[in-house]
Image (tube, rainbow, N blue to C red; front, side, top):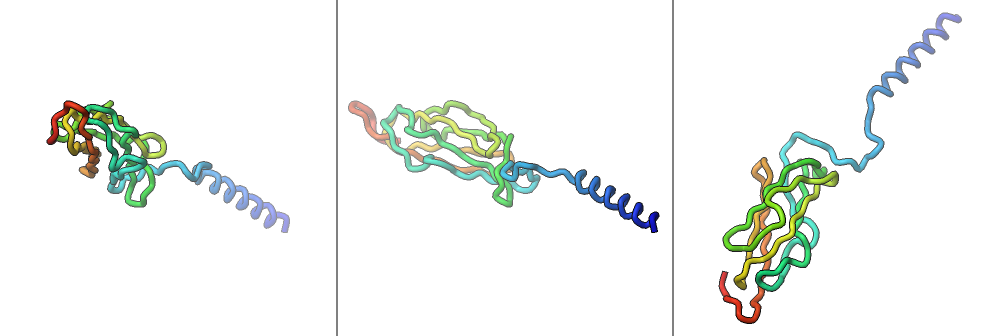
Length: 143
């Protein structure tokens, strides 16, 4: 009978060690690094901004990169590209932070009208931002 009690203790100890080896994260909000398809999503106050032609937008344009389960993805390179004569960006390439977010500042083109920027990731997923550049005294209209 004493042997049976010792066997149970050994099995209990093995079970505890096995459970401890399973690991896990104590931070359930940490982004997962899923290898499934990734998507890029516009975030924050990025859309429908307006500023004077040749001026920086009031808010940075920002994106989030998520996996197929909508979990944010850290460390993902994002490429930013001005379309047409839509101004200049603070960076042409950025990397998502621990929350799956990244951003750039956008200075609009010198011509009043609608300017556009594309943000894309390696999977081919992309988003297009548009902003309105308003006419400044003495500026040209049409973009």
